[in-house]
Amino acid sequence: MSFVLYNAPQSTCSQKVRICLWEKGLEFSEIKLDLFKGDQLTEEYKQLNPNGVVPTLVHDDEIIIDSSVIIEYLDEQFPAVPLSPATPAGRAHMREWMRFFEEVPAPAVRVPSYNRVFLRHFQQMSEEEFIAFGESKPLRKDFFLKMGRKGYSDEEMQQAENRLRMTIERMESQLQAAGPWLLGEYSLADICIVPVIVRLDDIGLGRLWADCEKVGQWYARFQERDALQKTFYFGSLLSEQYGDVKIS
Image (cartoon, rainbow, N blue to C red):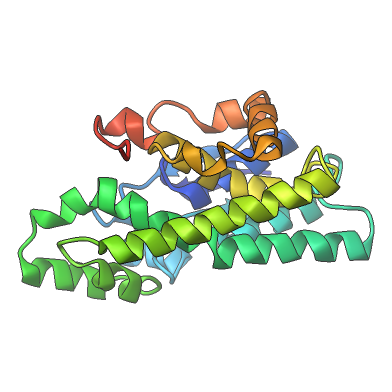
């Protein structure tokens, strides 16, 4: 049995799969892709993942793509360390949270991430080079081209921050009701959102939960988990790669 994870250290989607693998106690090898060099857009990689994004997990002869699909696959395949509720209703509620996280905070966190960090890579391109690079992205072309070489507007930044704050408020309410984890017991729902929270903390947006005591406790509890510590090896945080990522 072998696992090969094609991923990027700083990718939040990659991070949640690494957390899940470590929680399951599964040894895996990493092939680290440089997203700014376009490693994920090569024809060789797109034979594995036609969406041209990370991560991709190769488990023996099986190729599994999409981070949330991957972590559910791992939980089904290796139930000795369960990361889902025992009942069908419990699993349904877990998936409700996972889908919400994919729809709301996952795309929202890309806006400050791109503006504060990733934009600099594209400002050095000519307009033609930038458009060509954007057009080569099968899944996120529109999101990328909307950013442009000048970045997202202040209004778009505020809209993204509002969606992130809404997420945190929902988490706070849920943790007050269920705690200490989102569904009471630790699950894939917690794993799905924590890389976004780490990213916000890393770029100086921890103030979004300054008045949310339960979220703060949840985050502190997460930082004690061995899987989180192993996942965030050096180079996984943007602040370790760039010296000016904090939002003032």
